[in-house]
Length: 252
Image (cartoon, rainbow, N blue to C red; front, side, top):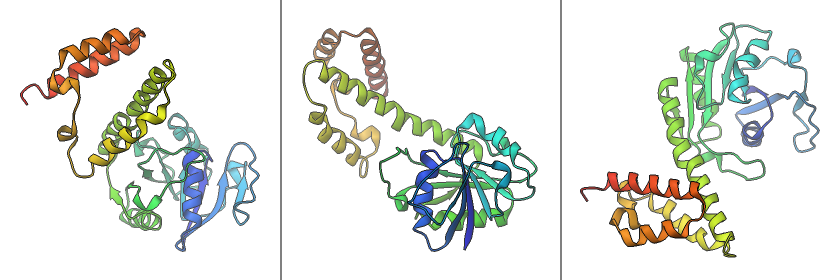
């Protein structure tokens, strides 16, 4: 049984706690958060707001904002224990040298009340010592079928790619919703299209799945769309993405 302490209790930690609580291979001994937490869902877990009173465990998982990771790691009073963070964008080297360093990065977008299936979520791990790699691999496998050992420099590039396909795409969804609502049309009209576009990528490469007026170089439609967009920022985004798609598919 792998014992774990979660440090921080935001979206990532809350989802990890739910996942670990369903595993026979892991026990969450404690959860630290700066503010007091009261929950009846996990009555066997010790919740504390005293960072200097953390119990001994096999692994301490820091689940805080990227900027706060080095500060929190420095505040830990113990030494030579395995301390990992869950960030995709922060190097393992940002952790304090007084403890054994590692990364336990679940590659997913977590929202507070939206359940996720951890079995399908890739878990990216990293550590210095082979024994720590093995422990993190077992920890990852306890909740997911997809565990990958990825070094910090590669993981940081993976995170950039994730921002493009998740955060930026989600922002484009919000623009679509804004345009529809301005004309009293429901966003639900776009949901089948969104789902089909994502589903296509299970058997097509993104390049092959590209459709639309930009790829076809349909100038009449492109100009009509630009005339319909009243927001200057929307126009610029449309022009930029249209040009980028045309550059990619120039010879097709």
